[in-house]
Picture (spheres, rainbow, N blue to C red):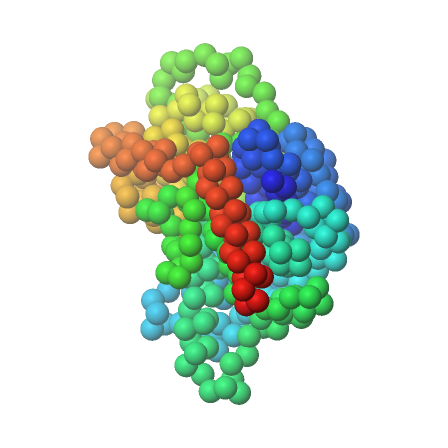
Length: 434
């Protein structure tokens, strides 16, 4: 079958999607990956076939001019209205959801999707994919799939704040008078759907199914959606393992990594790196800190027990470590979890706090608020991680839950059946005239 992957040009999202694209390709299926033109090299560098569509539009440039543009709660955490996924039902209002959706359609979703839609639909009509796999905010993929009658799935690599928020929206919408049932997402996507011969359905927002990289113990799912679990496979792009990393450490090794996305787009770490390095500098450990070069230039000193690097393949580094301190980005968190390592998280952005809470809840690590945590707090937390056998057992348990999820190779057969069933259903409907 022919499988079309698509995502707006966000590197971390692409890296999480690539292993499934490889699995489908090595199973004998034709695979293409569509994104904006500027992202072509990133796709081809991963050994996948790129399809440049539309024009380049940089969401991060807009955010750099106005950091609060997405309306993130307390300037961190989930953007509105998707932060309702972390709230109790009684604290969620119709006004907050409807106004939040209206704002995000105009600010975020159009910015990420409109530059790609027309070209993506045109390519789909010419290539005729059987399946479209789209990251959870690239609604252009769902529109293209509907335009050609292809099956389509979201590929989720974080908490399903989008599905949960939509579930709350539909629940509250049904309680409103007819003249107040505004639906910005349906209005926007419905206009595109009709343009290409279709109509709005909820599948344009949440897919016909959702491929989920997050183990259920850490996930927040919408009750009415179908989820297909998928095991996370570490992939961070081209990398080289240095000779020193191949040698066993002489002391407990601890990794410190605070993410590439934020600094790669001109942002800063949420925690004071110098304070953390100083606080850990006299411990009998080997600290390996992967820091963006811009952050390295801010350091006044590097302790003797610390090695600073701009980039290391995290999976190779984690394989030599006893614990990891990180920002709770999903790729970092999942790589650490797969190695069965205790985690000290300093979550700040998007769904990092929710994922970090899950890690702490299952006993696999500890969580600190980076806006409040001092170097001394990090030192104390790391001491607990290295000495508490209960946390190590919790980390092993989380590893086992992740390993229980189907590999990308195993999921290929599930997707093949999914496409065949959708095709058979469509054919039966056509024959019956329904």
